[in-house]
Image (cartoon, rainbow, N blue to C red; front, side, top):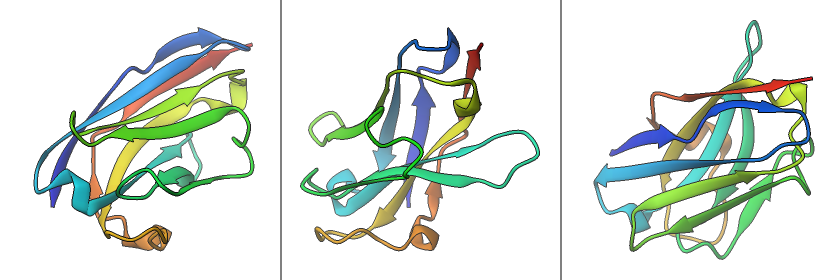
Length: 125
């Protein structure tokens, strides 16, 4: 598995922006598809966005399409989540996750088995 550490969370007003980062170590980062999930208080963890091993394919939850952008820099072993036009309902702990898959097809959501510790994003109204 790859070890993951998220950063960049914080408190922002509605309409604001944040960029989350996830730094990877351990296994070869470029062998992994990467994703962001989030979990709000009292709710189940949900998928946010995913990117294939080389950035050639991306996938987004309908709730974030047009507002969030996932990207990766394999040289820096880092995946990013740029979030704009944030809404109070985006408030959650955001987790970075990895799945060993070197194809343009996205792994099944349940195949992400390397997880970071999470970073809190709070959007005030």
